[in-house]
Image 1 (cartoon, helix red, strand yellow):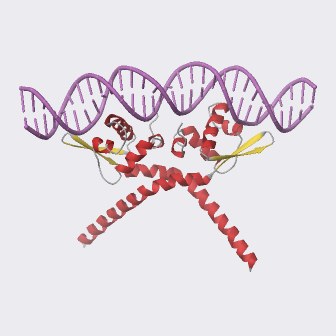
Image 2 (cartoon, helix red, strand yellow; image 1 turned 60 degrees about the horizontal axis):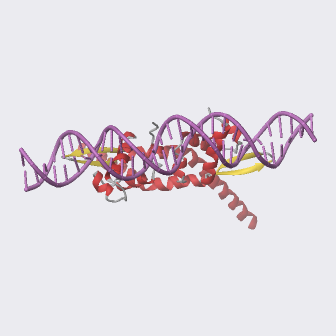
Image 3 (cartoon, protein in one colour; image 1 turned 180 degrees about the vertical axis):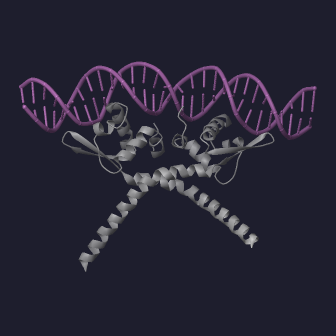
Length: 106
Length: 106
DNA sequence: TGTATGTGCAACTATTCGGTTTTGCAAATT
DNA sequence: AATTTGCAAAACCGAATAGTTGCACATACA
């Protein structure tokens, strides 16, 4: 079973859950209230997110609060870095072209 | 059939293809040479990437060169922005705590 | 013109995925 | 003690996915 952060964020419901609990911890029921699906389904998503360590649990009585492991999000950012270099270069190249045109206009 | 960039990058082979063609356009055969899979399989991934507009084709004789639409990668970056704000805040909070400790030490 | 090459597409298979239903357990409430 | 509430886990199902094999088609080259 593949279980990495990229597979975790592939599902739109899971992305929504991540956004939802980014700022405050929530229980499965509270999370499920925000979606058109059952709590069990949300629970399954939470399990996947937990396995990927994107989410951490905190038991409080019979309730379990789920919150985001924000640092995990940085892994995506890290992967994006290789492309960031490219698109910044492209942007600078465009910038150079624009400067050249301006120079020629003078 | 879901077809968005997050689903596209969920597959490790597709991520590798994206990285591979990020800097230079390549033909399906050339791409497949880098993997332990058939050309047809790579072709299928390329079709998905094309449908998501992450990749563009350029026919040259009987060869088709595939290259990366780098701008599409920015969509992931855009989604990450909401979390970037949080982790920068956390970092600053940590920074504040550290400063406070230093202050107290004085 | 005949053959080799580069490619996409369709059919098929095994596996995975997302969701629902059911079950069971522990904590809270009565 | 009995009931309710919050939750996870298992069993099941239909749909999607990744990969393979086989085929068709166009371009290149002899």
